[in-house]
Length: 453
Image (cartoon, one colour):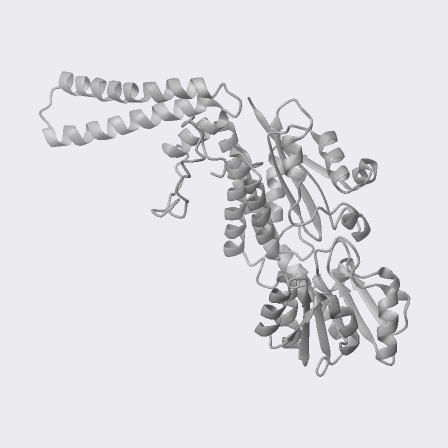
């Protein structure tokens, strides 16, 4: 059954932070399982949810339009009305969806053009889809292709050479507020990758001490230890805010963790010395009302635009080169999708068999010497081609039968990989890290392929 690729999403270009936080799905969203196992019954799904975007990748049979089902399930997961989501949504299908995903993976669609963090986030989303068994043949292949395209873009262009990160932009904004950072103290609320990057940039900027608060105290200790800072129990961090001048918050909490009334008390304890808050979380961690307090400077992730546009002209030139690379890879992926039809695969199998037969025939003729009669040469060729076709008869018959089943494209894909019909370079240690099969859980149907492949 012919499949179509759909991509629905919203990002920092189509929706403000208020909308993004209302439709954020967290690091381990259940939407993918809901779309595959629920009423929508799509074939495959992957969900990427970050502070700046939500991307819902879906594979479904041609002729069905899953948009309404995806919007309803997505909004339902967030307790929102789909009508509020629709005006901010973009939708791509077919190779336009593939092109968009490759651009996202390569950082071309990021708030900070060329930033590398999005690739790690896409890999995490893919691992989550594999664990939830919502990634099938097409999403598996598409994600691995996206990872390799992103790597190619990063190594073949200078897109990442001068890119800044969200965390860097946050620290740069702090420098503009305070001017001199020496002697300032900072607190990181949350201890993920963004907090780690922020700690590095804060130390480089000259802050005297960093406090780290995190729900998992061991992680706070680990991060604080790495940057010679102090860990703070999450339950106590509000009572320690008066010690710091700068607060950068990046937790995954679904609600506010720093309230305006808390900050009023903090300001009294600090005798109203200025405080700088930057909220790079979505949903936001910090109550927007604290912006109304004197001597408090609050910025959210959308306020970083001016800082992240530094060096943008140079990165745009590199982005144009990256687009060329992506265009070529989209075209190649489209060819692979077409090959999932059983007929092109059978033709490719027979071509490979005939090619190998003729190669071996030529070797044999060279060994026999120039005196081989034409009749003998023709007979040998007929025999070689006949052996090739007979060897492939049973695999082709099997492929024709299984390709008619639901998810039959798995067998077409497996055949293409077993015979390397796409002529890909396969490292000698490929699959070396695969876990041995758990025979206690193995299906009796030995033809079933592993969904994680």
